Length: 340
Ligand code: NDP
Image (cartoon, rainbow, N blue to C red; front, side, top):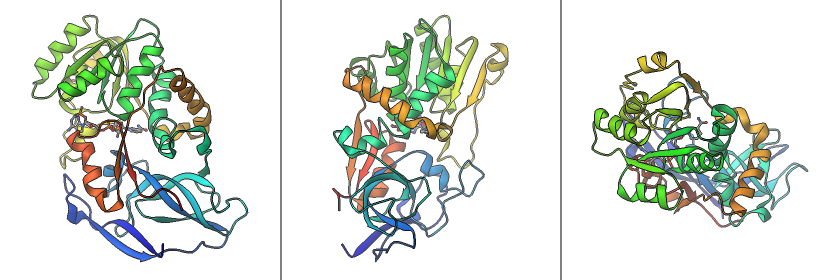
């Protein structure tokens, strides 16, 4: 290929992103810088976090500069190299962009991966990538649930949430999941083995809180929060004493310009609960350790990680928006190419 298609951030979205916030452009394929290499991106991870990176607001990462490709974790193949550390043909995972080819410097975040270990390279963006490991470390290292405890998960049918629920079962918890719609709730109990599934769609905070109470009369010992907003407000009304809340994500706020926040915080105080602000980035040095456990559980049939693979860089906008309409069924991934 001689053309590098790049999906650029053209302007900062206000509220829900629209197609004109982005531009798909064609530029020449880059050559490796001195000591660096060029990656042919094959799969890109589409994550709710990317919406936050589009805003010019303080966060754990700088905003995506306007005119740059939308930042994304990708897995791909080294296409050209000026370093002995990365050979043409090596499979690598790194923080790149929604584009055909990305320039990398040695010593950055990009690491080699062994695709012989997996049925598809995209696995390094799901089960064995940051998303699967978000579930793994958030439970095993942050919440540390004990057998018999009640675990309440929001965004439960999504990539992180479905893994959290299944790992919770492996750790001996009673697991309650909250998701949008009857089909997602069916998947929670039938495909992922949750004990109870609750549909939040069209319900008031009071109604949702009552359904959680019916499922967990003694309250939730651990809340794994992916959603925020009214879902979290209902959860906060159902905390067990000394509950641990893993604050992993607040997707209901990401497209809200007002960022209204969550009510019922008084319950954190009343139940002497603890909220943990949690970022998977902290666990990067332990990815191999967590990935090995996840791979083991999958091989034993104890953990099911679904992927929602959308195809084509030209479909990046529509694919990304699946996260916010709830259309994605499993870890959302964009396939860009098969290989070199
Ligand atoms: P998912 O696969 O869960 O996809 C997003 C899901 O969120 C949708 O399918 C939809 O499910 C739900 N959703 C979207 N909009 C709303 C809304 N307004 N109100 C309620 N639910 C909504 O994505 P991920 O698993 O990748 O991410 C889940 C969460 O984890 C996100 O908040 C993300 O930011 C966070 N995260 C945090 C990390 C960390 O290091 N802290 C790392 C990775 C992810 P439904 O149909 O059920 O509504």
